Length: 503
Ligand code: ATP
Image (tube, rainbow, N blue to C red):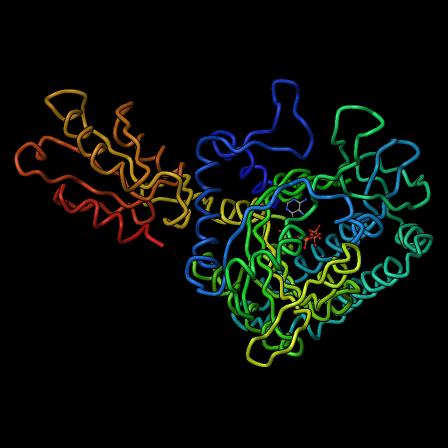
């Protein structure tokens, strides 16, 4: 698992997807830059989301609100008082950890033990092995699951009641040690606010304390009435946006899974109070469908319904994805009631109500939210696509099997040799296709090596121009996943590519 994850990170760097930010200065922790291919992949994911959420829904519109907002916004939203993570320092190593993450890691170790038991039993029982039955009846495995459940629920309860001493007691009872040094010498658990502060204004006296937004959602709530009125929106309707958010994560690790500067894709759906259950189910289903439409394997997704919720929510679930380090949250779907709009009404003194022309009544709408991290989605797509394949001739190839619709480069055009007029034809093909697709021209190295390079880069099609092209205007088109090569007319190329890469 670790090895696979390391491969993902190094592949992302080698092929121009993701770089550590400020690498020449030894990097900035948990901040990353998207390189030439990464920026394209990220844009394609964003577009895929935007099309599904905004373009095809008549009743959802998109906005682009600013990162800076009036500071009172964050009092109203609860972020000033309650956007905290429990944090614990190790006295010996002087390292700082998130207490809940340490405990989660401990549980992940137990999960590894469960996996081992399953593998052992699989070997022993062969075809007769029934996994479902094994994990529900084997006393050792059942015991492990019970352990995990008890630990997590106890931690959840302590955090909810802000009983940080109990979180510390749990760490001690479980004999959790510093993951780097092995020391168990901890300080007290403290709360740590995750918002980044900054200042607006030139002089020290008049400067205003601002925060970098920790989520994009509040820009939508604050604009709710403006959008509703100017767009003549009728409930139910949604407002969507994508944009940067910032969190001073204490333990930012796992590459682009948890970053300090990241991008969210959020949609707030405004509904009539009392209809939230139906809409919650509706959006759960819709969002899962969106994920499955990318063809990354049904078995890699699961819902994690929250039993304990933030005070404002009356239902919440996560869509979890199987990352190289296990199932983790990819997207959250929350039924937020009228909490946010009511808070903004209270703090701003302005009414944020909807007037229903048919029933002639005004009310504060309820909100159903879908919120997904763009970078996390990037990691899900990228890590799921990277495979090492054994070929018939006993060699292996590295392929990045990105969903074609998301691939940064859709086709590479390769003249077989750099003479006899082949480069000119290849360049003409590139000039014709580039208006519709992102394509590249590649004439370096033998054609076999060029194929491998494009495989590793995730390019779905390679188009090879050879001497037969001069005779009959046909080229070879090779598909990344099947490696199948077919002879097609140059004039059909655009249709063939479009067929596969269009949303
Ligand atoms: P987590 O429990 O993983 O910290 P969260 O529950 O705080 O996430 P939300 O506040 O619900 O996350 O944010 C919605 C989405 O934004 C998450 O599902 C995730 O995809 C993304 N996200 C949140 N924090 C980060 C981060 N630090 N880096 C990258 N993506 C993030």
